[in-house]
Image (cartoon, rainbow, N blue to C red; front, top):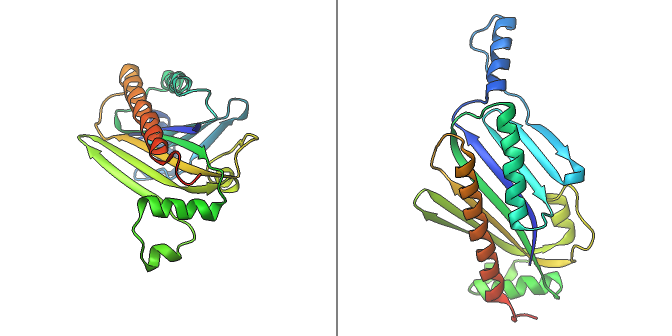
Amino acid sequence: MDLIKTAVRLDFAEAARPWLEMREIMRVAGGNPKVELRPDPLVLDQPEKRQRVVLLVRALILEQESPTSADQSVAQALEVIGRLNDASKFPPMEQMRHDSVFIEPYPLPFHELVVFLKERFLRSNAIVDSATDIGLVFDEHEGGIVKHIQIGPMEAEQLRREYLQWPEEGIPDTFLFIGLGYVSKRGAPYEVGSLREFLQGALAWQVSQAEAIVSSLRGEGR
């Protein structure tokens, strides 16, 4: 099982300070006190680090591809987000989200992996039997935490096209895709210790959940 990508998203209760200042400049310059910002997301890439930061008016996203380990992913996220906060203090947070993408290679042609997953998770009927592709989505609510699980067969080209900016060599032709999201909707001021605790908890659940999914399928359909 390989960890292919992680993403951290912080949603804020209000616009970040630079956006608010730009809005005030626009209101003064345009003579309209009701002008609101509707800018496109600002995308900043560091290809050598396989990192992307997306800045929105009330959110930021940090994507990391091919992390060496879950621990490294957390450490790098804390470092980058901490420097962003140092550059301009974040507003209070409304929500934190962490996503991980795992793949597990399977020595099966795509259509056979589809059949295998149908048999493992679904009951036979006319709709299921005629489907040529499937994707399974599960949600779990636990207090202020929401956990998302997405499972399905995938081919290398789809992974490159839909998820990766800097795909590495050696992606298997066919594999089990596992996308896991972990969301906290407990609003709070930004604090590095709280973010560290959230990220470590999110990744611990995601790694254990991915391992449990692969373990439940291991040895079947091979």
